[in-house]
Length: 153
Image 1: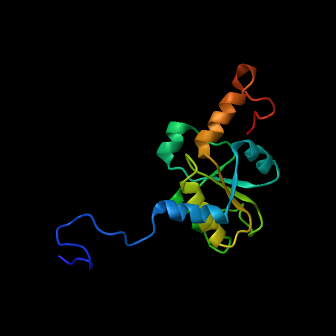
Image 2: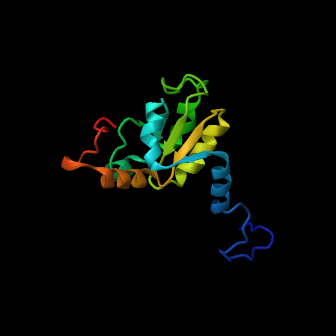
Image 3: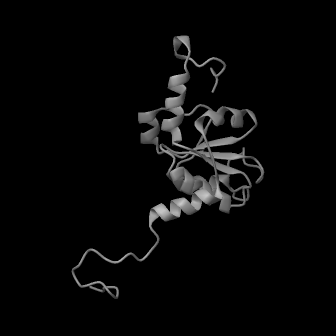
């Protein structure tokens, strides 16, 4: 068995060799925009592309985000790179605002930073993710369970 310097043979706890994920997340968030759930509808009206990166099992358990393009995380960069053969038809350049959504707003921050690295100029993630958006929607619903003016969102 080969061991790294400073790690005793058989000792499974090793010194940190990389960057803690909290630090990576913090760095990503300094580079992207973060939007509040209440801002999402307005951005959609202005033409933003909303991308839901939650895995299928989470979407089934939590619900869907109407109007969002569903791109699981493992194909995100290929689908949002306008120079890639497999890009989404809605991605024709680098100027359209993009909002990345995950379940709670953590993975989306990392994904948004990666999309920014592709060259897109306006990339954001949704603070609190789908769960925060759904909670807001639930609290804003009018009589009959539908928020006035958002029947199609």
